[in-house]
Amino acid sequence: MLRYIISVLIILSCSDIALGAVGCDLNEPDRDVARLFPGSTGFKTMYISIDRKGGNQLLARIEERLGDKFQGLFETGDVPYTIYQVLKEGKKIGYIHGVNQKGQYGGIQVFLALDLDGVITGFYFQKLTSKYAQQLRAPEFGKQFSGMSLKDFYGYDIKSNKATGESRVGNIINPEPLAEQDFRAALRAVKKNLVLMDEFVLGNKYLTSLTRKGDSVK
Amino acid sequence: MIRIYQVAYKNLLRKKTRSGLTIIGIALAAWVLVSLLGFNAGYESSLNRDIDSLGYQMLVTAKGCPYEAATLMLKGGTGLKYMKKEIADEISKEPEVDGITSMLMHAVFDPNKGESGGITAYLGVDPATFPGMKSSLEFQQGEWFTDPEAPEVVMGYEAAELEQREAGDKFIIPGQDAEFDVVGILKRTGTQDDGTIFMPLNTVQNLFGFKDELTGIGVKINKDADITQFEEKMYKLPDVQVVSLSQVKQTIMTLVSTAKVMVFSIAVIAILISIVGVINTILMSVMERMQEIGILKSMGATAWDVFKLIWFETLILCFSGGVAGTILALGTSKFAEILIRSILPYAPSGGLIKIDISLVIASIAVVTFIGLISGIFPSWKAGRVKPLEAIRSQVE
Image (cartoon, rainbow over all chains, first blue to last red; front, side, top):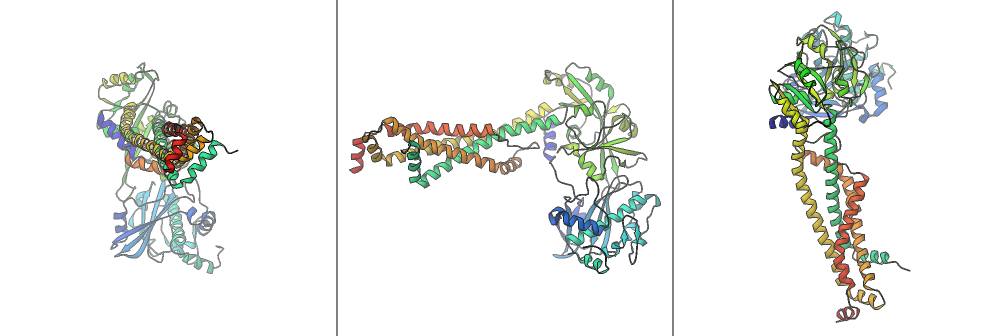
């Protein structure tokens, strides 16, 4: 009986109360960072939320840049975003950042590996609840994002699912026509991820490139 | 006309450092006392709330690893052993039983969770009994299942957050073709329920091929029943094991009481030191003011007047120390809570230190009373001073 009780105590002591919104962390950072950035020797972790960084004003700007409103119970300003600064022998070589996205049948977690200019070098679905997860998680699908940046995604309209102008997003192929909803969710997650990274760590370098084109972002 | 307490106050101000240090000593003792009593009240009520939120006082599971039993009950793990539903029928017939709720936990490997897959667990609950037994659960959105066999899920807040689901959304289980309706999202509870995906018991049984099988039976016992006796009866059932929360609570309280005894000993020592400090301070003050007391008495002050004057000084010191200590306890209760959580083997959710107004008043009253007791001797000694001898001794 003592064993039962001790086990209950161990489990009770593990059940922390977490009252804040849940962010999107790598499940196994040591392994995942090394995989997404081969040759890296370490990483630092930063936690940023929209509420803390700039509140409602920042949220409004992010929504405008995204071209879509934050929706639902869980896409809120208090979500803590985890940004991994990837290091090679002490020198920063890039970033890894993930976001949660609502999919057709469940949650989607999209992680991007970015170089210091915010260009995608790696794409990773950490979690994908979808009937077509196998097709979407195939390496060929993720590779299509390599080399793209927020500049490409500015030309992609989330609501209409149309890519215009010089945007290369239109070239991304959905591997399974029946997975259209999750495919679009993945594109939205990538755009949101890139906008947040531009706001949080890249100093809004892509905001300038957008306003030069005469868009309405302020 | 100057009043006696004004004289006492001014006397204390004449030796500010000494009076200040005495107040600090009393305040520290009061701080320990208030924090300890607050912890005494807060810990037990939080533990009771945690246990009550489970809804049942006993969990009966199939014989197997005890860690599975505990995991099922509190964290939502996977039961590798199953028992027949007839056991539930048998238990429900016992006169001590107020109600039972049958459960079937099933875990599924999700290849699309992380780099190399992960496990997701689903808890099948009886829609007729589970909501009533877990009445503390509230909904953020939606409600419980519409039908005992409905293809529906209710999600704990964190499970819903991970799956980005809201009431009205569709949901799928890895390896299953069927789609499920999300009918409810529970409010955050700070317990294992937050991460649980609930489904109707029959749905889970049919879906995973465990018809008439269970992994757990939550048992709510009548308030008047002898739980220990009932536990003994349960042990006699074949191939089941019993985890009783009354035992869990008892064990936790035993572990905590050891820590309490240690802290209480420290509090008693602190109070004794502060009593000695008060006696020392007042006595020194009396000795230093022998001539002054002698003059007071030669001017017509009675022994009772002098006694009262010195007693008032003690009262002011102890009352100030008591108030300061209580404020300190209120201000540092969060920090003390963090410290306690890091020391204790198990700390329930919610506030561990509960300091309410009655505790504040009682603590100040106790500290003041102890101070007044310790002030009797110096005051009595001052009251007995003979005026002429006192004046002469100082002159010499």
